[in-house]
Length: 446
Image 1 (spheres, rainbow, N blue to C red):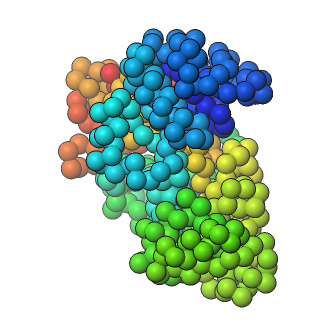
Image 2: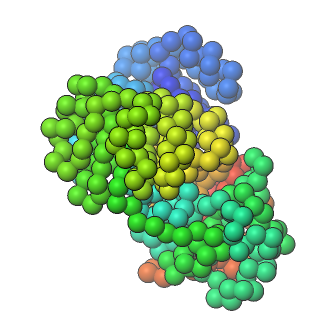
């Protein structure tokens, strides 16, 4: 696929890196020479310098031949204009990154489609929804639902009390004869394993598991995890992500927002009826103690500074806050953050990439999740009539070694994948895949 990306930051660079690995033909438009040097040092991508809202620059990037134009600069007006011009110049599909939440209503999305922008993505909205899901599913480090929860992906760290420790997948399968979940990956010492029946779980492993709803209780029991209810929530930072989280949860939870900027704190106080807004610096330990951080069920750090968010969550841990979530924009920090005890990491660029990458695949992808902490994807793909995936039972498929089928959704029913299961046309299949396997998986479904 020929893809043109207009970007001025890490979202564009990350997309270019990921899509290049999948052998797409990528051209990236950047506004400055410095960004060209950054891109050329990280990717084998053709870069062009210029303003993506200039027709001459879009023509130089050969946008008329583009199957997909992605505009993901920080300024949404530039993205909207770039996508509109790109469509007029011949781009087949266009995607624009936006920050204004009102654009995401169904009526407004339809208006943008009518004028030539096929899809809108809002990193702040995506991250906020991910945080809300994590606050509702307290036993997991990371979660993602497929087909409205008919199957779910759970990530959790195996602590020293986990019953699954020192057991193989085959042993666990014998204990749970009617298996409602399946381990699809184990992340250990910075390496990701696609597990076989003889693979064993060890302490501090990160286990990625696909489960049916009725398998969640057994799964949490094996992982040594227990659910708890969140009633008291402290948010550090009242920017777009924090504001969206608070707006959606203010009637369900007792929320305190700590905002360093006085003007924004006043705006937030006028916006919410059921949230307490405190003007102050979360690095002030006395302030946190005065606002009863020890009585919080969850602490979510959402400032624009990754280091501040990480340190704030570590500080919350010293007060035994059971659920901590940090917004981290530097991907290099994610693995470190998980290893030093922060409960969950949310990365806007990874979440945004999940929404965009699905449009670069030939097969029909109904859901995709770029996972935090490991370079892998969980995908929900539709099996097309006569596609290779429908030709044989799972065990007889020439499935790539760096990928695994976790489960299948057929109508209103869901199934955990086993070797003799026959996938049929129309089935939605949940696959866990490392980067080198995504293209091969795509080929099996169309």
